[in-house]
Image (cartoon, rainbow, N blue to C red; front, side, top):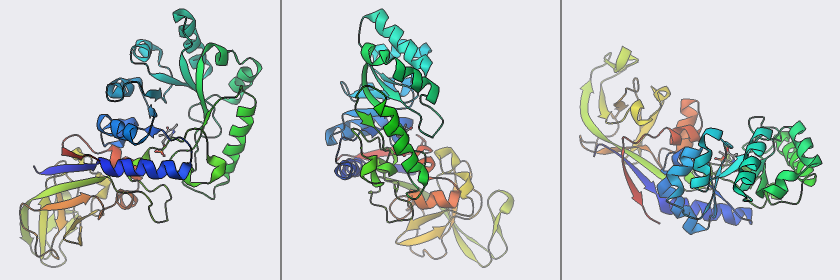
Length: 357
Ligand SMILES: *Cc1c(COP(=O)(O)O)cnc(C)c1O
């Protein structure tokens, strides 16, 4: 196996328990984007065993894909109610997060048609301005809270835009705006914090936090020591080692040239495996306690590293490409992105091995 992704489900479970202890109130599992790249079907039952009873995905097809792994659990669709997929919501017991007047209307119509008080969550926009009821729709709902009678509204929720910046005034503004909105609606459990929000303090506590990233080891408090455990380790095998002379170029367009004689390790991983091409000449790998700089362009299937300092490295050995010694947060900084993108980019080409809790 030339490229292997080790996924530590025990660490995911531990992260869940740490977040639940910190929140001191119920905590859901956000498993959209295939569990942030780790595999939603594998991750969901582990979170459930650790205590999660509510799950969130982005789309109905993600919901259908994971439903069998968590039968009976509450499974919310953040993207709202997609009319073309209405049958899937009903057949797989997917709970829409109603984001708009149209969502509310369509789900109430389905409730009347079926004679059932269908479950739902209602999302209020408090400043993210992507999804959720706008002020006018909130006014309408406050004046006539019929959806709360016709539907089984499990949560009123909102989403923080700047939770990873604890000093941003937007956090308090959103807390106030959410408080005001909830006060105008029939009493309903609330859902507020994402991963970083759990670390913002008691004002951001609610009846259900919705962490995703931190479950998978992403640092929820950037700039401070990561309190979460690393969950993934991507190991790439060295296919070839070669000596290059001073002045010789490596890779497409010879974007790296040896300043002095060097030893180059070519590894079986590339951008088709989700290793970001923007890490060209910026990334690094780890071997034997050392960091090996990524040199040259990231190719589709191959990476090249300067292994001059790693004298014990042999062909066939594995380099750590992502993991405890190559944290996703640090790679993300070098790539000009966030750790979410590093994880969700991981493709299915790598062989996966899961370590049970
Ligand atoms: C993705 C998402 C979350 C989880 O956010 P993290 O930053 O990964 O913890 C929570 N709520 C909503 C609405 C989301 O879209």
